[in-house]
Image (cartoon, rainbow, N blue to C red; front, side, top):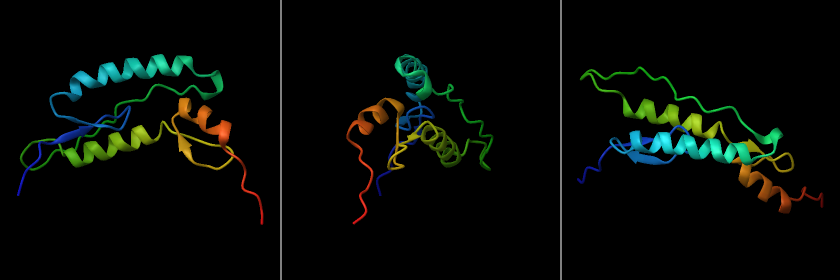
Length: 108
Protein backbone atom coordinates (compact mmCIF):
# COMPACT_ATOMS: atom_id res chain seq x y z
CA UNK A 1 0.00 0.00 0.00
CA UNK A 2 1.39 3.39 -1.01
CA UNK A 3 1.26 6.10 1.65
CA UNK A 4 0.75 9.56 0.31
CA UNK A 5 2.21 12.48 2.24
CA UNK A 6 -0.32 14.18 4.52
CA UNK A 7 -2.03 17.26 3.15
CA UNK A 8 -3.70 20.22 4.80
CA UNK A 9 -6.73 22.08 3.39
CA UNK A 10 -6.39 25.86 3.03
CA UNK A 11 -9.15 27.58 5.03
CA UNK A 12 -9.34 30.35 2.40
CA UNK A 13 -9.46 28.57 -0.98
CA UNK A 14 -10.19 24.95 0.05
CA UNK A 15 -7.25 23.44 -1.88
CA UNK A 16 -4.91 20.85 -0.41
CA UNK A 17 -1.23 21.59 0.31
CA UNK A 18 1.61 19.72 1.95
CA UNK A 19 2.20 20.22 5.66
CA UNK A 20 5.29 22.34 4.97
CA UNK A 21 3.97 24.39 2.03
CA UNK A 22 0.65 25.36 3.68
CA UNK A 23 2.52 27.92 5.80
CA UNK A 24 3.91 29.50 2.62
CA UNK A 25 0.57 29.33 0.81
CA UNK A 26 -1.78 30.82 3.43
CA UNK A 27 -0.31 34.38 3.59
CA UNK A 28 -0.19 34.53 -0.22
CA UNK A 29 -3.74 33.18 -0.51
CA UNK A 30 -5.03 35.72 2.01
CA UNK A 31 -3.34 38.55 0.12
CA UNK A 32 -4.92 37.34 -3.13
CA UNK A 33 -8.29 37.05 -1.34
CA UNK A 34 -8.05 40.70 -0.20
CA UNK A 35 -7.12 41.89 -3.70
CA UNK A 36 -10.05 40.01 -5.28
CA UNK A 37 -12.50 41.01 -2.55
CA UNK A 38 -11.65 44.69 -2.98
CA UNK A 39 -12.49 44.46 -6.70
CA UNK A 40 -16.02 43.18 -6.02
CA UNK A 41 -19.11 45.41 -5.82
CA UNK A 42 -19.80 46.45 -2.22
CA UNK A 43 -22.85 44.16 -1.90
CA UNK A 44 -20.75 41.07 -2.74
CA UNK A 45 -17.77 41.83 -0.48
CA UNK A 46 -17.25 39.36 2.34
CA UNK A 47 -15.64 39.61 5.77
CA UNK A 48 -12.10 38.26 5.99
CA UNK A 49 -12.07 34.49 6.55
CA UNK A 50 -10.83 33.48 9.98
CA UNK A 51 -8.52 30.52 10.46
CA UNK A 52 -10.46 27.79 12.30
CA UNK A 53 -9.32 27.07 15.83
CA UNK A 54 -9.09 23.30 16.16
CA UNK A 55 -7.38 22.04 19.29
CA UNK A 56 -7.97 18.35 18.69
CA UNK A 57 -4.79 16.47 19.56
CA UNK A 58 -4.40 12.73 19.07
CA UNK A 59 -3.11 10.33 21.71
CA UNK A 60 0.40 10.64 20.24
CA UNK A 61 0.37 14.42 20.72
CA UNK A 62 -0.15 15.38 17.06
CA UNK A 63 -2.91 17.55 15.65
CA UNK A 64 -5.79 15.58 14.17
CA UNK A 65 -5.35 16.41 10.47
CA UNK A 66 -8.84 15.15 9.63
CA UNK A 67 -10.42 17.55 12.14
CA UNK A 68 -8.21 20.42 10.93
CA UNK A 69 -9.06 19.70 7.29
CA UNK A 70 -12.79 19.43 7.99
CA UNK A 71 -12.82 22.80 9.77
CA UNK A 72 -10.76 24.41 6.99
CA UNK A 73 -13.07 22.96 4.32
CA UNK A 74 -16.15 24.34 6.10
CA UNK A 75 -14.45 27.74 6.34
CA UNK A 76 -13.64 27.76 2.61
CA UNK A 77 -17.19 26.66 1.71
CA UNK A 78 -18.68 29.45 3.84
CA UNK A 79 -17.10 31.95 1.43
CA UNK A 80 -19.47 30.83 -1.34
CA UNK A 81 -22.46 33.03 -2.22
CA UNK A 82 -25.78 31.57 -3.51
CA UNK A 83 -27.27 32.69 -6.82
CA UNK A 84 -30.58 34.46 -6.17
CA UNK A 85 -32.07 32.78 -9.28
CA UNK A 86 -31.08 29.10 -9.08
CA UNK A 87 -29.59 28.79 -5.58
CA UNK A 88 -26.22 27.32 -6.67
CA UNK A 89 -23.22 28.64 -4.74
CA UNK A 90 -20.20 30.39 -6.25
CA UNK A 91 -17.25 32.52 -5.28
CA UNK A 92 -18.44 36.13 -5.60
CA UNK A 93 -16.36 36.93 -8.69
CA UNK A 94 -17.73 33.80 -10.43
CA UNK A 95 -21.31 34.59 -9.32
CA UNK A 96 -21.26 37.74 -11.45
CA UNK A 97 -20.31 35.67 -14.53
CA UNK A 98 -22.89 32.97 -13.71
CA UNK A 99 -25.75 35.42 -13.30
CA UNK A 100 -25.25 36.70 -16.85
CA UNK A 101 -26.46 33.35 -18.19
CA UNK A 102 -28.66 32.03 -15.35
CA UNK A 103 -32.33 31.90 -16.26
CA UNK A 104 -35.25 31.05 -13.99
CA UNK A 105 -36.78 27.63 -14.64
CA UNK A 106 -39.85 27.80 -16.86
CA UNK A 107 -42.87 25.79 -15.71
CA UNK A 108 -43.91 23.20 -18.31
